[in-house]
Image 1 (tube, rainbow, N blue to C red):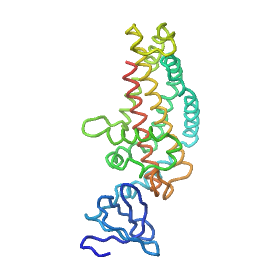
Image 2: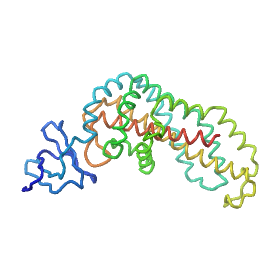
Image 3: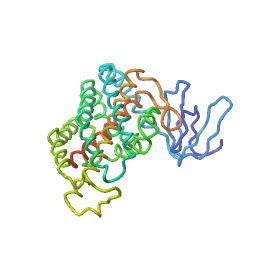
Image 4: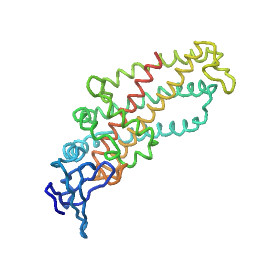
Length: 318
């Protein structure tokens, strides 16, 4: 390849829509990322090596740089986590997830309170399970690692850094929303939802008293409980009933988010404890991601999703 620009030769590490990663050594330890917009030409040789020409000096992809820093730290934290306890929590959350899949067909306004009441009955268990997961991560030191590298995890949040397993734990729309939340929160003056103190404060907003208070309101609203099939908010005269139904809808949405985030978190801790930090895992995009980076990035994504659900629940229960 003839060009006056810089040429990089190595092994194609992965190829995705956003760009490619080229390993400069046989062990695939020195990996450089080239954004798709900066690639002028890619050539391959029979031996499997390749060359890419970039319009700018190449820097290590943040995922690679981050992994080289925290691989050992993540490995040590997973050794300190109570695997049996996390596995039990994951099984409970998985059971609740399967239970609520059956309620997806209940879409009418009249059935909304029934679904909301069911969620409210399980909400303390979901909240406490999430708290137990956060406690395990805190004791093991994972929360400290995520806090120290918060900016880096926010930058790499996306399909390239998350393990393929996540596609089995969450539907694509929910996972995409969690990635967006991870990139958005903690920037400038917005609250960082992976901070343990923030999570504990949000837990206080979703107290047993707050849940019971709304349950009592739901049971007392006879009009909301006896809506005709096909009823809409516009057809309801009582403003109190309208507010109850709007809050019920928000509680269902936020509870779903909390359960999904906690399930993603538990699933990835289980993966890390069971398999150890593998050198690499298949990613959601084409190619692989460093094992430690994948587990930590997915924990970061799950924490943001679950804590955002907690925050929305607290607002809805006010």
